[in-house]
Figure 1 (cartoon, each protein chain N blue to C red):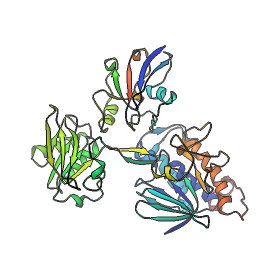
Figure 2 (figure 1 turned 120 degrees about the vertical axis):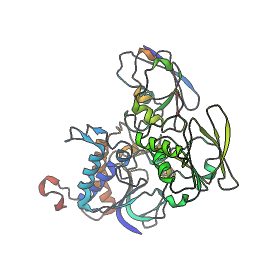
Figure 3 (figure 1 turned 30 degrees about the horizontal axis):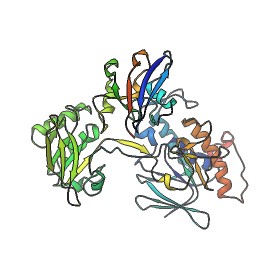
Length: 104
Length: 334
């Protein structure tokens, strides 16, 4: 099992536990866990409604793609730890990480 | 004033297809959308995105689907109010509805179909102190009339294509243009970014990179903006206008005030005909919710077909509805 933590927009922190072999993006896991993530574009890095900030473990993620960076660049509240959850594949490397929901 | 049978709020794919289904039953339709073009999020957010789950189209680009839907409904001659946000919905004593938009357009209709998708798209607002205080008094999220900025000092905030394009354009209109961007480079179109750097070198544009806007100040109208640079240095810039350009984000908007039953930002409907708790008001597509709801364009099309049958009975209670298949005589027979 993979375990990581999510901080919602109100500051509540919860642990999420999911099987390792699940073929989903972090955005899909957030939606399935009933977090208020719109994911308007369906995971194409085109709407930025799944904007998150990596609070712990940023170094475990690969570099964002140009498409993801292009979209992050349009966000007024993005930081150097900002990512789009739809572009992060679930895998054992997410173990122990912590993500904070951003955006509306 | 516009009079129609059905007023469809939202000109996305589901709203457009509702015109077709209503048209088959000889109902006239008027569409309203806050965006300046039809197509909803397909045209606004992902026009080049391939869609794979439309029956009969193994793959279709979002904008091509919208163009085809437009062609499909043209025979029914729908009318449009685009670029205006619906503000109020009032049921009149005679059972008809009166809808008013942000630009004072008035539409009266016999039934209302809300096909608003995720709501209206509103500008993303940066976190700047006093931002909302100066909205309309120096802060504008869109450039509708560039002449407003002639010979004025303006600050543009953002790093995308809109920010770059308007910086270039307004450098020939305003007396002073300052572009504030939180990074040190632009990821917008390379040509535009290069042009902005050239304008900065020529002294026609002030570039503040690695810089954030912090606070707006002024006596009733905007007079200055405080910015913070990379080394945390604080500067105050005199300005007449601030134009934050950070794209659009979906919001439910005034629909939330219409006494409809809402659950988690979606309108509750009866799956028999996608009617809401207000008789004569229907909700179809991504904006509605019911047990088992799937947010797919495909499902919105199905909902539009069922809605139209019931809306017909609501609009013309004395007429008999005779269901026909389009395969018999084509759409012209309807």
